[in-house]
Length: 499
Image: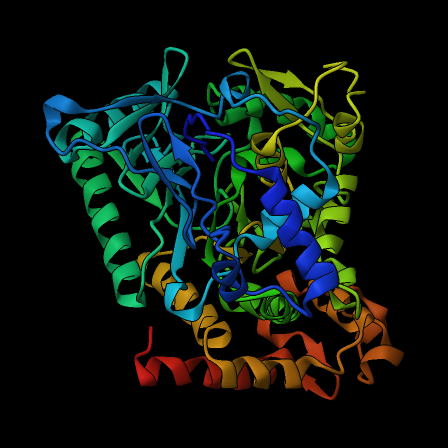
């Protein structure tokens, strides 16, 4: 996903350290209200840009600068040029990284809903994938007709931005909308509909169409055009070293995800646990990738299966989230152990694949000896971690296949209903509280251990939730019956119309 160029004015590391120490030593748990009481206002970070204000809501970080008139379209560079970021007086510490995540805490009235989705573009006459030249023309057309600002990487247009929304390109040209942080599900659905209307209006005139599905149903990796983005070149070279399906993930998958807020560390932990435990149910409900290269592949969600052999160092279910000691610091420890992909310096991506962010913090990164990271580098690193639920300064629910527009609206409705209503959240915790790590991992990967499942499975075959969906055996029943209970919980908030 494109990161918009920005120049930070330095904020006080001292304030962040105070906040971290309060959280760890002086108060039981960290809350947005405690920030305000201290006058630190860290929940928004109040980071200023030389030319405008940055927004930090439930969705992705966006630049607020935007001129409505077509004659005043902005052109911005992709990815933060960290050599232009304010000079760091001393190296980052782990406390800084913890405080960065904790700064996402906000009171409930500030909670927002951020939806992201990807889709495959194709040429209507041949069904072949869109070439970059066609994608470039499409982006240019949308910028001119609907007043989007262009996002550039060198001479290449690689995305668009408008207010707090952005459009970016995945490695194989998958077209992604990263929506604004919005207050209600109705606003989210309206945003999706508006985006699809705009894309269709320009694409149809070019003989292009789009398909909402989780895995490319027709073409092989070798047939997919490569987008001109530096970070993807590094990932493309690294992926085959750590898994057999990483290139499929990059070039042939599409997803829909929702980004949601938390009020405190305790609230983050509760939502993270429910999100992880129930992510296989979301995978089953939204399964939509049954074809590979024109033939049935034997899966309901082949996209989900792809993630099981992409890179186990940065993907999966994160069992430590269910430890009694889990919190922001635990996630930082995990993220620091995930191998790096890159660092952005001198307007170029420096290949740091497989290297250690811990070494970077010591100034011992082999690709950049003597250099130290800043918070932009940390933020970039967090985007290269791909678990089923991902923590930034908000939580990302990442387990669903891409699909048609109704499903793009349904996924945020599911997770908002479960996580933004206290009664539903507690009920979901009660349902999953006695699920073992083995059961949750089984739901993610395989069903076949007769002793564990207490059910008969013919010939001890390894079944996958991606293969069987809601028919996956679970305890004395099927996953479908758990899903029915979960859906009833998710309806409560919708009926009250709070979001």
